[in-house]
Image (cartoon, rainbow, N blue to C red):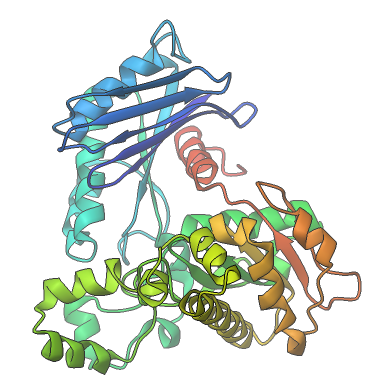
Length: 404
């Protein structure tokens, strides 16, 4: 069975076609700059590459190009769109409405749209993409939505509530929702393949580290706390996001800089974080190169990142009364062996010891254990695969196979 996985942004449409018989990616691509000038890239598993500029006024136009490429004689991977058994969509915000992945219905779409107030850029784009997909594929092709937030719906009230009056939660739904849930869910399940132990028997701290980063405490296979909150702005310092700050900093700076709410939102999400501290880049690799060359602000940015991640790991361990497994995933987590070493060298209090050679070698998509035999905690590098997790959910819901 072939599953089409869609990850829609406000001006982009990333996709993969996965053959679930062997979990092989048949094709992947991206329709970019939707609503601007449009560009499409498409690559098959046997390295047939298509790149071109297109007029893409809407997501519907992006799906028109995508669907034609999938069946194209030169660049296609299926003979007909009927060979696509189901479509799985990533949706950022499901709030408390969706505790698990669901098949798309008109009612589901209405609920997702109603949650746009919590994720205005992301949810609206997802609804537009789903409707465009429905217009492209006939009704016999089921659509499934997988939510970033659903994995975190097991977080207890004591952990997800903020110190505002309770009416703010009741009336405005202000609470911690958490994100990267599909990634945290995937890597926590993958632990069983690596360690031979089911996640339900373990205390796992999962670190998804990239341009956006979050740390998740997973107890007995369930998320019980995470660093991101109402939005993906909260938690550890990120590429361009502040991470956790004293709320009074926000009001103070708004007064000092004469910013309105929109200005401050842009400032905290797009101009801060590692970029704001280093003054160089939001890309970890650029900052690392500058720090190695003696740039003090770049060094401070990296020190802040390592320090905050260590605190997040420690906090997660305390939430579970211990830690059995530490996972690194995401672009930075999977590839920066220097950052991993610095983090783990400061976690001796948990009895963590890593094999420096194994750590240095486990990069560029490699999966493995980097802790020593004497380490009290297993430290694993697990490349995330959110697309496969979405495809599995789509397959499970459309075939009724609950064991997938």
